[in-house]
Image (cartoon, rainbow, N blue to C red; front, side):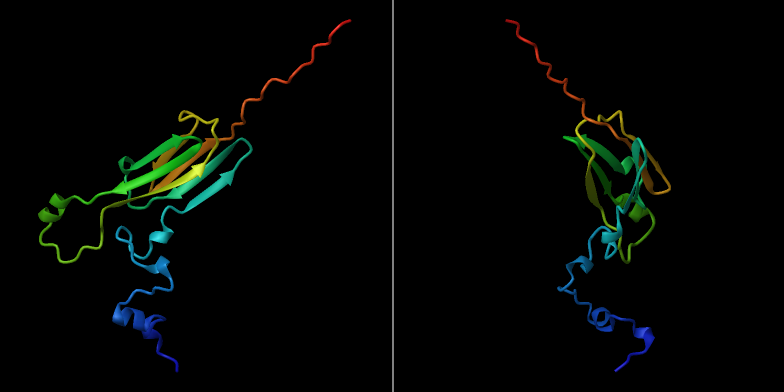
Length: 149
């Protein structure tokens, strides 16, 4: 039996408002609702001497984002908090769908990089990173000493 298109594909899911336990990725997340899996989407472009990384962080301010380099892993963290005083000034809250929370993502960049090597900028909800390719320092070659006699 075909249903009219006004009901959409998930008529009974919306009607009964039951979670779909077969697909746990669709379960609502407190911070970003059902779209949480689409956050921190990242593009990595390889250049001759560096990597260019663009990460979507919509709704965040520069002050809410932190970068940490530890044991060769670059960790990008973003935390958002809602100001309760701001809600009180705007009047009575009827429904709230925005929450406070945090997320993070890590990338292995190599143990030879330092914090000074990585350049970061944040504009229009996109975090842009420039990560240089840096090879490990080469160990000196072993040279044999000839023994006379």
